[in-house]
Picture 1: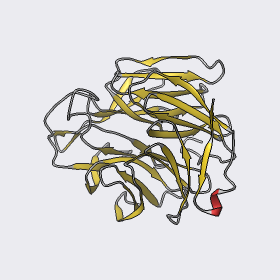
Picture 2: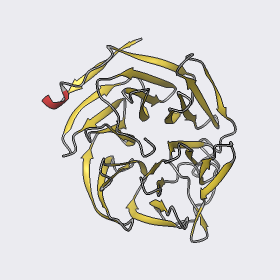
Picture 3: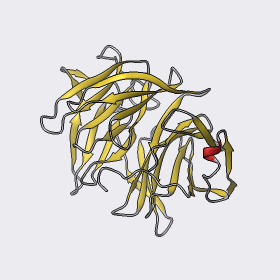
Picture 4: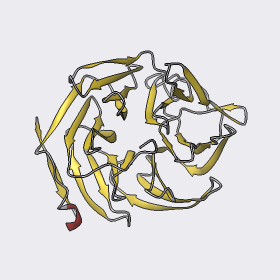
Length: 297
């Protein structure tokens, strides 16, 4: 057990509390990423990218075991409206869906005939569209994927149409787009640009286009994954902390973690257990904060 360290930057964060310790559920990964809580099975799955595997932690027994290996150097994971797993495979350079029978459906692997770079993180909107980021981390070396030539000029944010399956660029002015999340009303999309060390926010329109793109928050570390709680606060991974921002962009506080944080997800029966993927380990703690209701909830 590791003592919990909440750093309050704004009085509005003072009411956030929970366990007085961080629980390490597992360690031994090379780069833990993409945690996703699956309520139908009451388990947490996550990626260990360099080891090309996914692992799972069972909430009932506390046991950790393999989920998928090889895993296409999977990075980010989420669930769609039917509770199916959506995964970004950096090595395979595609976004896939795991069907209820265990089969794999490729949702996106090309844009205008050219292979994607290495899909990183994804989020599903309530209309069924899938939005994902596509930096180049998985093709720059063999450590987190397979070294390859970049076929698309730039690193972009994409949308997969829920009806036609069309893959379309919705934002193309990023250096390294990474984590992303919708606001509670889905009228805003938050996107991390890791290399520029900031979070941006876009307006989302009914036709699936974006506008704006102003800087929402800046920090001293490269932002990675993020999630929202049910009040609309943004919880984002950067450096050795999970940072919390009000919807107005005010930095409210930080939860310090012993290792560099890659991503996070709210889970548990009440969605008030925070799971944190940080370098070699998976941490968790129970909070008096509840995660935003997912699209399948």
